[in-house]
Amino acid sequence: MRAVSRLSYVLMLLALGLAGTGFGPAAVLGPDGTQQPLFTWQVGKARDMAPPNVTAEGVVVMDVATGRVLYSRNAHQHYAPASLTKMVTALVAMDRAKLTDRVPINFSWQDVPPESSVMGLEAGEELTMEGLLCGLLLVSGNDAAVAIAKHIAGSEPAFVQLMNQKTRELGLQDTHFENPHGLDTDGHFSSPYDMAVIGRNVLSNPDLARIVALKQERVLGRGIYPMRNINRIVQSYPGGDGIKTGFTDLAKQAVVGSASVNGSRAIVVVMRSDGYAADASNLFDYTFNAFTGIKIEPPTYPPSLQDPIVDTLQLRGNSLADKMLVPRWERDYVRQQVWLDPSLGDGQGGPAGWISFLLDGNLLTQRPLFRK
Image (cartoon, rainbow, N blue to C red; front, side):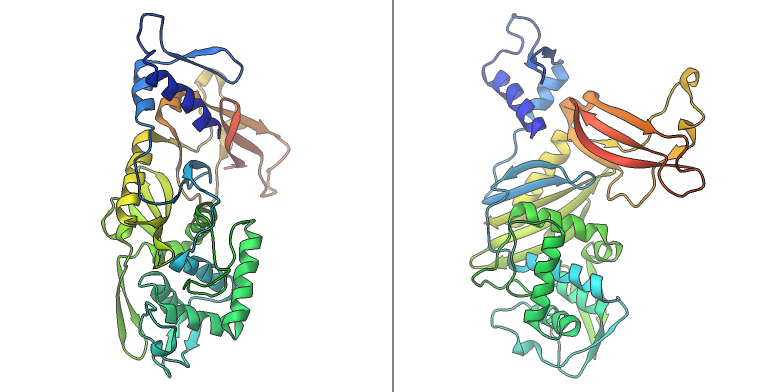
């Protein structure tokens, strides 16, 4: 990735002790081979870019606004995903059911495989799909996963086919499922990168994003199911708002975590960790310290350059974050390009143009512009 490549020049510069040695100001070579001077504050911020030590074997840090990977380790390595699997169970459920659907339960929590985490379902009761999703995502109920699978597809194997179809639709290359809950079995695997993409899709669904951010909930079945979200990122990290934890003997500890700070949002994935909460918290701290948020909005011009067409444009849509994350030391290098066609978007409902955000000529993100 370009940002990481350019950063390597800076860190090498610092390691060699060249900053402030009397040979002129610190500088790095830009993409065109020319020297680009670094200010003192940039050198200091570049030092902050070194990520923390974590116990996890697989790591991805993703900017939610753009989907860009900010840091990774073994991003495409295959690991047992444990209950991170349940994010795809939830996505398939939202594709094919409504939150208000009534789901009859024809089995007991005691019928699911041994060593399962459960919400405690009993045969003969009936819950809403929303209640089952709470049991699935907040307390990681394997019985909730089975109930959802049977209700939507008639059987677990048929539902698993839908799960694998969903991963193909998302363009994922490193994921294959054999069950809807995530217990270890041959052929059941995913990667940190794929899990980050799946987590971002969970956040793009307003109902799922609301559920995974809950600290506690009460679900009505035959009785009341009181639930406390087992995700320690949601419970204790400032700005933590999701998404899913997992644990098995093969997977060790895992999490797809989400946190929002000052309009920026990041996803942290750790897999095969000895302590997911500490690893994820350290990676969030690193991310929000080393990267800064830049608002995704149309440019503003001084009065002398104002254009009545440009002044009527706005961004629309439910962006997952107001700001995109870029390295703090490169914040002044982000540039905007606006493409407009005055004949478009006038009463037609479509975009009147596009705005692109670039860093050293590389596209960070592109958004449509509409008439106000």
